[in-house]
Length: 497
Image (cartoon, rainbow, N blue to C red):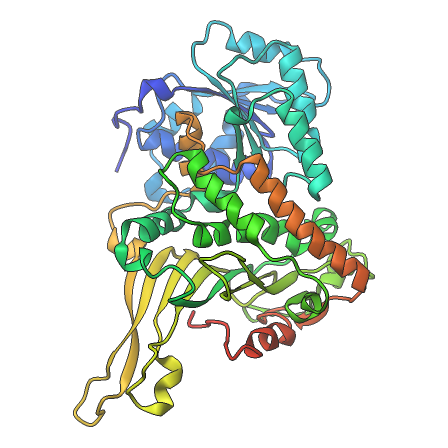
């Protein structure tokens, strides 16, 4: 159904968006579809303008044609209508610019002349040139006291490089106008996690070491390197996924209730979790952490190469494509509760989920052989389908079953529960919050740095031990050692996919 007559968003949220890297993969695959949906849903004020900036030689007409093609490729047919597409494309302008040199930035100031809207600068570019862009914008007098800047991860390679990049951004923008994106924080289920924890006494009173035995966080990727060898081999799975996505999810699971929903109240509690994460030292580094690297195997029945066989590979590389670990948040709420984290490439499924395992009842009265299933689990699925399920135990039906127990879910599947509602992409929510000037879904500088500090000590320990990553075949759930790591505690990874 056409949305062309949808009322447009709050005019107070109108912006001028300067999108650096407008011809890049992220912009075409995620940002422009998200902006289009905001416009189509009536959430983008009429006067909002979008300037695409890139190094290639194009004019505005050619740029609009490129964006139109990208949208038609990625949107469902029912999401496309001529009026909405035309209205959105008419917002777009294009400027060819060498980001690293000051020449040409005056055109941005001229574009902004007379505008009363705040400008949002979105840096969909390599982090190494964040500082150049910010300085050139400032030198050209293109900024004012309302300008916001959005930066993508990864912010740095380690703590030192992260501090250098953040210093460069912070020399131009105050922290209150810096929006560091982790797209996982924009997912609907992650938002529901906050509501689930803090709006429901059922969970709020149980969310501690007295009632929870352990927590699993899995972020599995089905793909391999996909042409990103140069970047990934320098980074590895720990830097690429654990330092940001998994630690952000862990913080939301483990943080204490904030005093309110203000950005800093939430982020203060997340920082406390990062500070309380136990470091890996001594024997724990070998016992509680598993590094892996995929070898040749199969995916969807098709043969796929190993990491060292990928195009452009360094055949001597020791970079990890898989990490599993057992860690602990050393505070009163979580003392003694292990958090099992795992993430890897070339897994059997694309899967992001959190599993909260509740403790068993202290006194058990049912069949002894069913003791192993006698606990509740809260399964929070982030992808591929977002949803929440609570696994409970009931009596198995039938006259011949006696008091046999049967596990089953109380299930909230967002697609089924809200069939007439489209689940918005994470970038839609994040871009909307930037337009509103709300920071609670974005990462503060001290969060980034505490996460790097924790990861750096782990990376340093790996270098000291000089232990190569364990091999695992593509299409499997990682090295056998990752199964042994959790099995030694009498547990197993939740695999009811």
